[in-house]
Length: 332
Image (cartoon, rainbow, N blue to C red; front, side, top):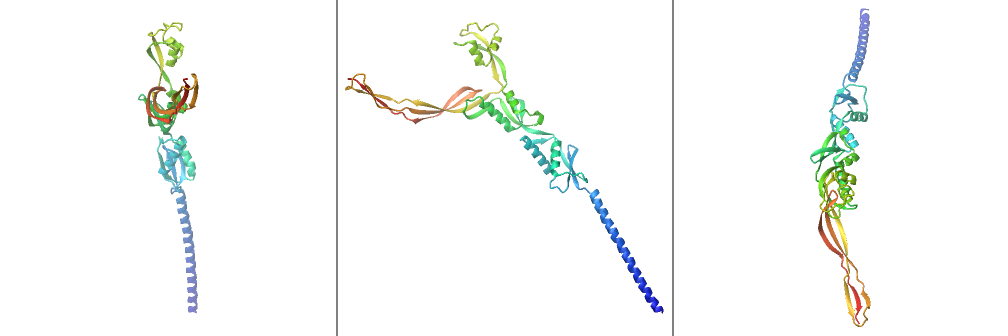
């Protein structure tokens, strides 16, 4: 009997131990799940999962840390977008920085780029016109400044002229970073650069001069000319050697151009006379009709503000030689 009890007690103890082990295992499993959940929540709510984008100390957007872009790349993309919009290099006034954070207010990379571009203020690399050593105005790019200079020079040349060189003697174009509100529009720049000033000069009347011709040559109206000569009237007769005060319009820019022109002149056919004593006097007959030739000359013409100051011959050749015309004349 005692053995049977003992055996039953052992079975009870074994079952109890197994039950306790199962309860312990269940507790450990629950604790494991709780621990994993706590770690996950910690990582989600506490550990950084994104980047705050800061422009000039101001938060503009937050992007996911999984975005394939770093701070330097992000800045280069933003500046490239702004430069494409203006067609020139830009220099930001603010600094851009990234800071790690944990946030649910995450936007896409494209949205962040748009917001950052709007947050920046910047300077543009423009082309500054320096006239007589003084900065005058700045246009949107160095290339546009060169284009305006060439346009102004072209206005002083005959239509269809072949330009060899253009030089503005009192102008320098510099690359310069300026704020966007300092950029001068193209039309405004052209208007200001073509301004003229009035310079009063003494003038000695030449033969054939009139008040009208003198005013026209000076580029002023007749009224303006007479205003500067209050002791004269348009009814006065001008004599060679008279002295006048002439206001002359002086362009702001002094533009020297060189153009190449081709001049073709006809070369007359030489005429040879053959006298025939067997024909009556007054008889005239063309035995051979010759043809004119052509001679070509190429000149380089120098102009200052549209006025020719020099003409240089660089080549000359016959395009075709003339042929002789033979005429028979009677001498009988």
